[in-house]
Length: 267
Figure (spheres, rainbow, N blue to C red):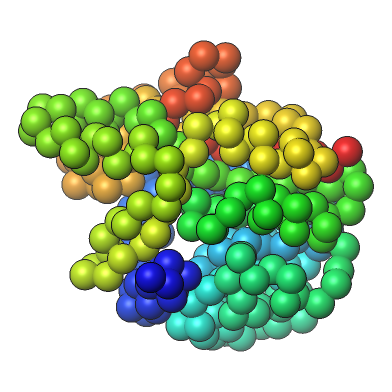
């Protein structure tokens, strides 16, 4: 069983449509935008970002337009091909460098010191060993630099309610597995490890990072796979998003949600 190869092939298979499907999903687009806001808050324009799991270059497009230099890596060669095409069309090649390298293979990247590392919408959930990955990231982020990541969490109240109503107990248990778990994507398999925030943060604390901020994503707002529901009820979703933005960083509930967004500084 080669979990990296399975995940790579799954994302290769959806690379051509991934950017468009992401930007057309209002729930996913809102999650992505929250990481953008955090990067712009904590990392000055002109800084050099390491994007872990860059996909088809959606974030590279945004960050390059705002003056950042970006080095993006992704296990999927097809995703990197899409990202290179996007960067070339935008004329942003001078600001963006892309490599078909898995996060687990970060040591293949030439030694460099980055001002920050970011990872949007769960690529760090697909690594084989988060403690090893944390050390490799720490080796490439300067002291005082930050890691900003949105990570798929364990406790998603919307998901629990949805599958409890369907009496699909096995689907509820998926997030509570303590190992990489197979998750289907268009007939292929992504291997995913779901994290409680404290476990994720502990791996990075051991590598020399300290938490600056954490907030819930997809707690009051439903998870991205409920796109059809969101499109039928845009006013309700807008109100729930306002509530999540206001309350999502409160202790107690910030550990819940489809994802959590964490900012950690290398000390």
